Length: 403
Image (cartoon, rainbow, N blue to C red):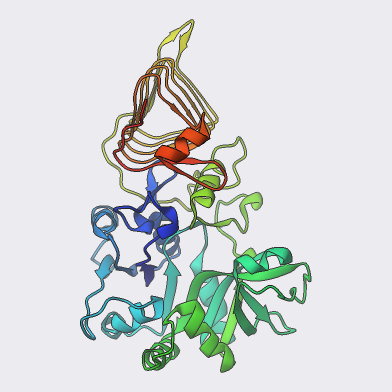
């Protein structure tokens, strides 16, 4: 079960008319492709994606892209909030599962994998499931190690002396304790869970009857099972992904803010990227539209099409312009004498002649007219567009930049 119903308010304007998991990432992909690829590569091919807010583009992407062979009963199915238990939307991630209990009853699995839909990482879920089964726990929570001073930014998992059983689950504590084997680190929850089915059904049913509950997986269900001594932790550092370089071990990014979304893109483009999209043994799958190959054109002095430390998607064109440290999505076109640096250009973006784009995220079909500037004068940009805390300029879908 993939939880994909969040609003993604902190990613506005990128989520103005699409769900957060449907936001494009890395040129060719959407964020939901990463969790679905991890599950499918790991051998889990009966997947439901629980959606709610602004789900049309997400539903369409899943329906077009994620078509598995039905011969063996495989499927990836978007499931909107169906109001099966009354005229109300999902009140939280735990309520989403409670309202979708028919999906579990249809399959009657022994275990249920519940993963979030909007993080960037590679993970073999089979290894986490194997640990869960061996431990006999009711729930296993995936965790990534983070520096102790950063504990107040995460949901923190505290463990017993053995380092596996969860003794407490606290949201953004200011007095967190370090791990038994690493006092300078804490376990931060990744929002990925493996449940024994009977435990999950009982927990969400009990939670639904509690009028005071937030009906949240991390805030309600896990603490309930911690109190019962049925919660274990899975150390993401132990996960071995086929084809992954050792330097990428433990890479995981929560791209819940505009700055973290931008930073995760910058992780992709160096000579030795922190996170490489090129892993033939554990590919990230996505929709393959019939775009032509990427092109760089014009080679005369003063009008040289060049791209350095970039990801160029199929259908993108660098035409007599200079593009550096950037990601160009399909159909993005940078025209002659323009300059694009440290930016993310989504599908169909047009950057006109002599224009300058720096430290920016331009959503689908944004037009930068001839001579216009983005990211050069942040005071002016703040009056017209969204500018993040770190000074990244974000321009929403279909806008035309003011010259």
